[in-house]
Length: 60
Image 1 (cartoon, rainbow, N blue to C red):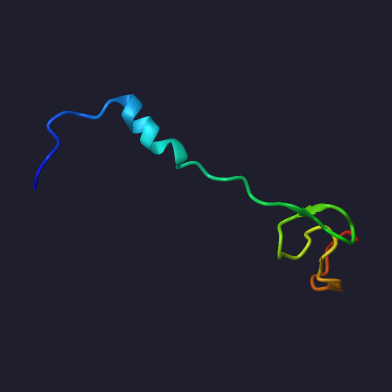
Image 2 (image 1 turned 60 degrees about the vertical axis):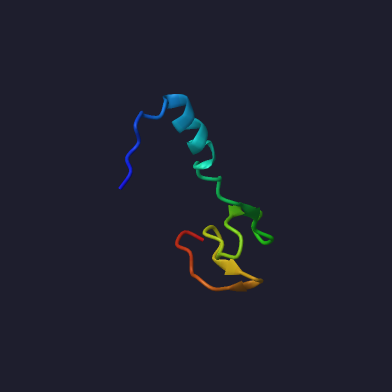
């Protein structure tokens, strides 16, 4: 197996890894309570999904 003869510099390594970061999670507004929620998921504040109650939320 061939091995590298010289080590890669920090700049070269960091340039290669420039796109390895995580993208921020997408958020949308709940049409019922207007709180932020993940798309295609049950609203954690009111428990509704696509206009109907799916999960009972404590405190409401």
